Length: 101
Image (cartoon, rainbow, N blue to C red):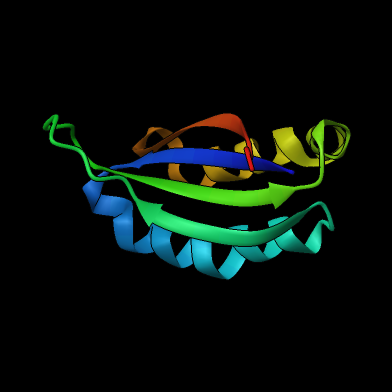
């Protein structure tokens, strides 16, 4: 089991609009793709005085093959959708975590 983590840096002027999008569109679309389960949204607590707020959205995905299949089918579309809605007001990067039992 892997965790697909997307960290977003959201500028304050678009924070409310972004939170609505993440809840109403992004998370439902990710789960509806059939690749991801157990979405979680967390605010990143940061003392570094950055502009904006960072959020982490995490999804469980079965394995690297499933994640790679999603990336091929949907990955660039997800990034384009975010960029077209928010431009440089929302930056993102992804990481993959392996659950250790």
